[in-house]
Image (cartoon, rainbow, N blue to C red; front, side):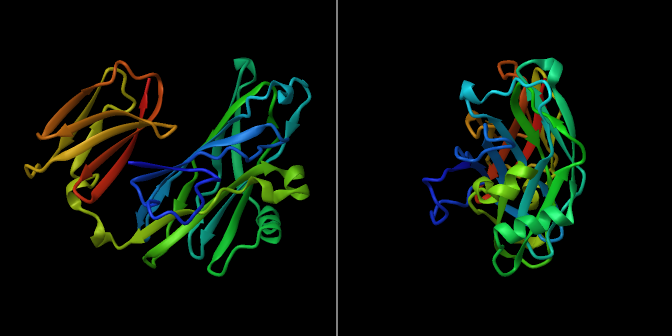
Length: 282
């Protein structure tokens, strides 16, 4: 199951803890003021001393008056995550910019920067027990005919179980120095649990999804099947559920020929335990 977060939702809802949290944020500008966060997909739990990947995308705001057509338009991007103390992010985060004219598609990496981390901390002070991890693009990123941007940072957890939250920020170096507070997501909660809290029935060692990438069929094998019901749900990157099936045997084959190319998330649920897998359909 998913949870959509918008500015109207706020942070205090009782239903925040779902299998995946999808934050659709409509008021955040990217780079020079014509981009919006569209998707932030973060698990609602993780285990101590482990890691998880977060899928993020930003898109054009849909206003043609803001489209960039200047062939000389390049800029340095800024990305940040507010983290609990002792958590960190794997450096050198790849990003991809997709343009309406494919000739201008480009990519690069975001590198940790002490200066940019401090800029975030000075502008948006983190609460006690948290800090800003900030990064900037290693080189100028072309924004000509911008359509969308994708990145997937890997976050490493600490050793203390508990309830935490993360915040995500994105912008332009010059823009951030003028008005950094405009580009920060609402806090997105995540629960850090002990390794013993994960049901081994849904662990990666017991369940295999293949092939990945997939094009016609997706196979789900349960190595040790306990005659228990597993609910399989497939979500697209917007958080929309597009497939639902009950798994009641050791091996299951799912026809995915009707799915468009792209990234999908397969959520498996057994009672109160859940596990999510990312697949690529091509």
